[in-house]
Image (cartoon, rainbow, N blue to C red):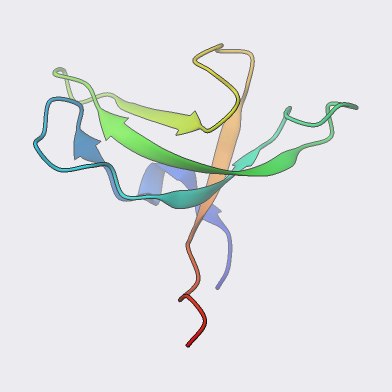
Length: 77
């Protein structure tokens, strides 16, 4: 699995009955030293069609730049 641009991540409309698709996200400014961090997250679509990436633990603050995503790996068998 390779990191992909966040613009290519699966997204659900924010008012959908389905839960957003959980993914791994790269928060470019997310570390204590602002050098980046990996988090669980998702992407949703606003009513106007704008994509909004979210990272668990980072709230909606626009200072967090979420730039890439990766699908979750398969669970152990």
